[in-house]
Length: 454
Ligand code: ADP
Ligand code: MG
Image 1 (cartoon, protein in one colour):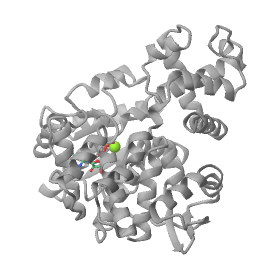
Image 2 (cartoon, rainbow, N blue to C red; image 1 turned 180 degrees about the vertical axis):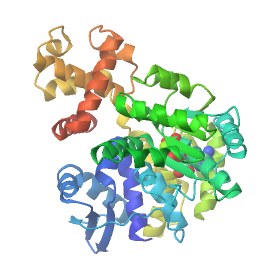
Image 3 (cartoon, rainbow, N blue to C red; image 1 turned 45 degrees about the horizontal axis):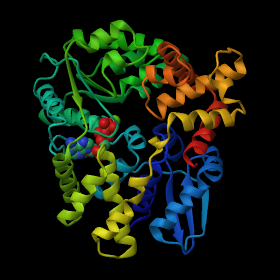
């Protein structure tokens, strides 16, 4: 096992207890650079990350390392160094998959080839089940007949880790395979936003337009992040129109259908609904087994049927986690030189059963926030609009949405019968503020730590 595989196993574990945003922010471009006896050196990209890992995540990192390589590890040192992105190295296929599985958001930002496509995300490696067959069929239709079918745009939506990015990039690969001269652009809505802001700052909007309006196929991932970004939405609207009018194919993904994306302009919603909308839902037991078998074959891992069945029972709602589980098993096998038994697998996957950052209840969240801001419950839930109360209240609503995935009406209800629009407003407001304020980001981080470490 290489240092890289070790680190992927650690990341796979850590990811379970962090939000995607935190995970990406703090673990992007990190790597194990050295293991020697009881010491592990972790390379980090900058001093900021170093400080953050030392102060916030050191215990979790140490514990996870100990769990994977053994209790003899006593020291973890964080060292600023240039960490090369590992994606796209075709000589280490298993490890590349590990990167994907453990750090999806990190990986999807690192361009794998000149079109930004990960070589592993192809149609042939995509397992089709009842949960994704419609989206898969639509993706294939688009790949066969880009721009000309009635599937323009194609809008694919579904929960985290269910294969949206994989399918999206599969279209790109298939089109390039049929015609290598086609121009394919894969991007995320976050990158689109950043590029746009950058272009305005540096007065290079012409070049920006050139980039985004010239491809034959525009693949744009996670469009829900355009919520409440008016300038970006406007720009995307024009990009969309340009491409669509020229019969260029657009494919988008999102974690929810167009109508449910908060603060998305009506004219964009209606455009997103022009073509075909397909959802991906959670895989059933049979599909999970089929996926596990395919991933095992890919990684050269041989597991007994009963072990595969067990994993498919334990991990139900996320294919990324299924992969993470396999990577952990590989890590144990290689470090501890123990043959893989069902018992061992049960032990390895224990954290999947008990962990769960989603395991907090609204009540616990409310109590945690009240304690954090030193407020009485009836103050926090009351009607007063005093800022010292209104702000923490908005934090509760934000976290209920973000962490517990409560619906807006449910949030309003929990907070003393407030209207769902109040909850939505609070969520958008805090979402926006978190993006611009490091201080608030840290506060929220602390609240979450208290919430989940109780
Ligand atoms: P999303 O974009 O929906 O969050 P991803 O496309 O990143 O999810 O998928 C997460 C992981 O699960 C990837 O490694 C992907 O290859 C794998 N995966 C998801 N769906 C399938 C599938 N149907 N067949 C094979 N692998 C899949
Ligand atoms: Mg994705």
